[in-house]
Image: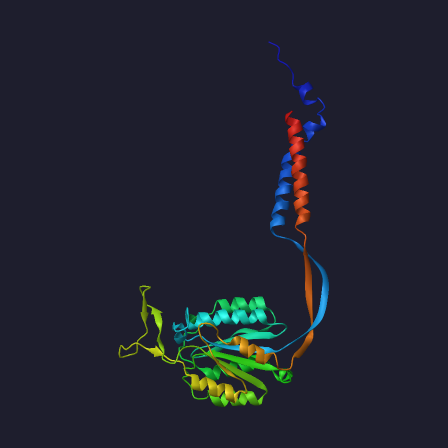
Length: 301
């Protein structure tokens, strides 16, 4: 029996279409890579815009002790304070802001900055669990806020500390520290959170249920606003005292006073202007997919 030879088939010249059978798959792969780049939203730096900025240096000193969970201000004292601080940041123009949190001790949660988006992010995550040492060390918090302004080169700048607390201080040095800080040219304003008649402190037990904090004798602890102390701190700090309520925490009054202070002129800041370039790989991917479609369709026909 005579069998056909495959020599002629193997040596028959291939057409261009036969040589490019791999091309549609390659085009699909390249288009897929380009679409991934599109989702990354590539940008290019367009230019540098240099400008000087004028504003006030503001350090917020915020009480995060468990007493701030009291619900005499709705939804509670600490949530009300965070909402109002975010509203304050929306009104700032060129001012720099920083944040100190305190309970039984204190630390700088946010170094002084003009990045308002970062400030809001740091404020949103504030909880009483941030500091395990309970108490209300107001004097230490004022000293921490003062130190956060920086060293001697900042003494000529207009600076203000805004103390936000219920005033239940466990230390006795707050007034002296406020007076010493005011002598350095820093204005201390205070905001009182809470009601004079007081409110119990809701806490979660091990089962996740809400109950009220009790003392060693089993009595429910009632936290009251120490308005007199906060007034005295503001007086020693050459500032004003505002009592918060459910409609307003009083930051707008303090901001109006701060805006009357002499503005600081800061060194020129360079802002990068970026322009989105995602449309370039998007167009390229579309063209490749169209090429693949027509090549594949024509081959099928």
